[in-house]
Amino acid sequence: MTDDKLVTINNEALPATPTDDLREEMNPAIAALLAESAQGFDLLLADFRRDCKPLNAAEDALVQMMARHFWAALRKTRVETGVVESHMERSLESSQIRHFAEVNDLNDPGVNFEFDTRRLGVGFDMDCGRHGAQLTITRAAAASDTGFLKYYSMLLKVQSRRPPAAERQLKRAA
Image (tube, rainbow, N blue to C red; front, side, top):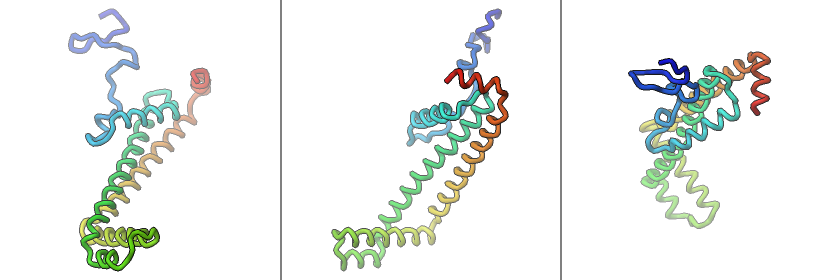
């Protein structure tokens, strides 16, 4: 084919411009679970691209990895919330918690706070003895944070080495 604006793949003419090509990128189908908002990930990635202003594929790949790690950290926060709520509900089976509820006025805000604190403690204790889910989530969240910081640091290093012409181009575009 002679048209330099099209590329032929399997006898099908496809656009050759960088914005319309078939390169893979971190997309909602990869980053978001079925129970999550794919549009939410798209918005997060767009925000990272807007704020970090990647100029080339290498910088954009680092921005995508940052968005992926940040998205994973948000997911782990939601999982942790669910685990804690689940353990607090199961803590109601504890005789200590049932006794505390029987002998105290749970309508008193101070007592209710103490009740929730005790339920949280019993739930955490139960988790430590059974599954260790909270500890696992904490470790996984730390890994997401570390990954995000790693890619952010790499992006800053790459961007600090941009040639002056690229910086001028970026300023003109803004």
